[in-house]
Image (cartoon, rainbow, N blue to C red; front, top):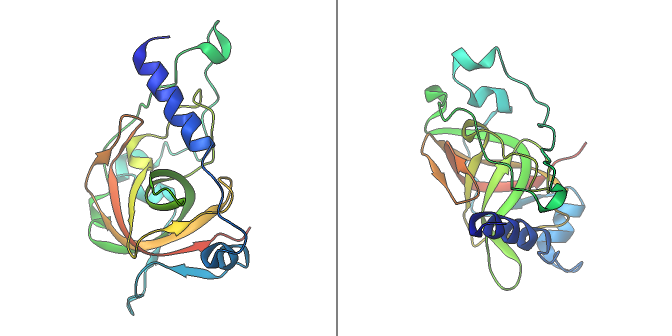
Length: 191
């Protein structure tokens, strides 16, 4: 295993090992009860509710597939290389500087010692295995949460995230995101 794969594996393992919030934490209780967790004062203007296909430019929407990709394993099994991100970075420019509300799963990027997450990738599907490729860049939103952050419940929980969407590329060594969202509100997604 080379250094890059070892670093990617270490990052995914660190994400999986993040401590869950204490049951008595206010934001955790609110999330479990399905109440909104406001990170900053909520703007009075309405947010446009969108789904993941809206992030694609018009010429890519016909080929949209909401299913996560299948895991990629080579002859080394779990010791094999981490799956790499592929796909388009093209954005739907009509959504730039728009206030939106979008559902998704959280991949924490900035976590303080007490477990509060302030920056994360919002992705359309849950997948903790490093052998599942990250979504294409135009299907990942880099979220900056105002108000200091939030304690999350289970990594399998989905959330509605509301804020101003920018067509600005961001990323880490793990993946790139074609969008950035300045989030002002998060609430647990109810199935």
